[in-house]
Length: 212
View 1 (cartoon, helix red, strand yellow):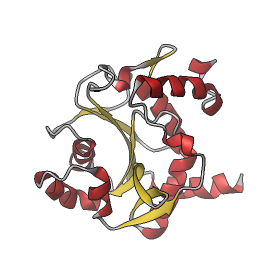
View 2 (spheres, one colour):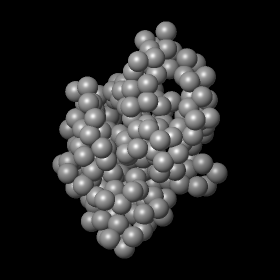
View 3 (cartoon, helix red, strand yellow):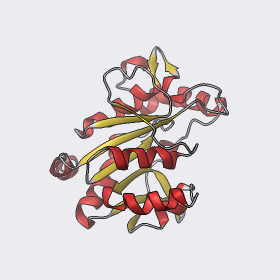
View 4 (cartoon, helix red, strand yellow):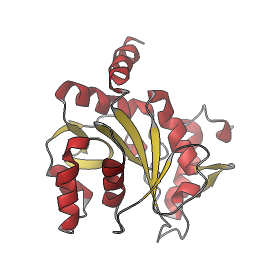
C-alpha cells in the first residue's frame, strides 16, 4: 500500500501538467478493421485501454486518423498525413498543451496503470522523457514524453524519419529497464494476437465487467 501511496502522490503532483494519449491509428492493413473499434464482449478496445489507465487520475485523449464515436473520451483527429504512429505523437504534442505526455497504443490492451506509474515517477524525479527498455532495446510504448521535444520530433518528421525507436532515442531521455511481466507489452497486430489477448484477458483484467 505504501508503494501505491507514494507513487500516486507523485502522479497527483503531475496531474495538471500530464495527459494520457492513446494512439488509435486508422484502419489496420493486417486486420482490415480499426483496432480501436474491435469489440470485446460489446466494448470497443479503446475503452478497454482507457479504463485500464483511468485510475491514474490523468486526463485521457484519443488520437485517430479516422473519426468514430468515442463515448465521451476526447478524440483528436490526426493532423499529420504520414501513416506512422509518429504522426499521432506529433498531433498530440502540437495540439494539446501539457508538459508531459504518457503515450500508449490502442493495440496494447493488457497494459495497466502499474507499468505507467514507474514512467511517471522517473519523469517527476529526472524531469526528462522516460522509456522502458527490454534486453537493452528502447520500447516506444508505453512512454513518457516531454512536450519540450515537440520541435525536435517535428524536424525528424519533416526529414521523413518516422521510426519511433530512432526518433525517441534522439531526444534527452532516461532508459528504464523493464523487469515485470512482459505480457503487458502484447501488441494486437494480427488475428492470432487478438486470439491471444482474448484468451489472457480474464487473467490480466479480472475487474472488467466485459470479461465477466
